[in-house]
Image (cartoon, rainbow, N blue to C red; front, side, top):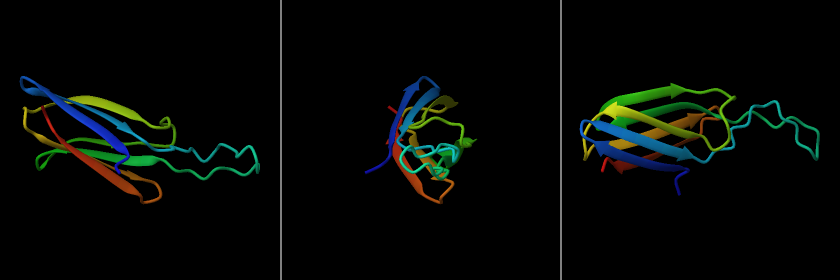
Length: 102
């Protein structure tokens, strides 16, 4: 099961992309209340969104982004574009989701 809910909606020559990603987004500065130990940093560091074979957005994130981040943006495209979002985190984990722009 993907950690990403992805939607893409075309309106004329613009496509609006909305994504909700399930991820703990730990900064590495919070202490565990039970043990007092620091919770290790674990956050999405890179997001790449493609439409077909063209990259339409790249984001480089850090530890300050909130848990379960939401991302929305527009790009010049059309209905039927195959939109794919892929994220990679600081521990090397990755996930992706695809949808067609409606």
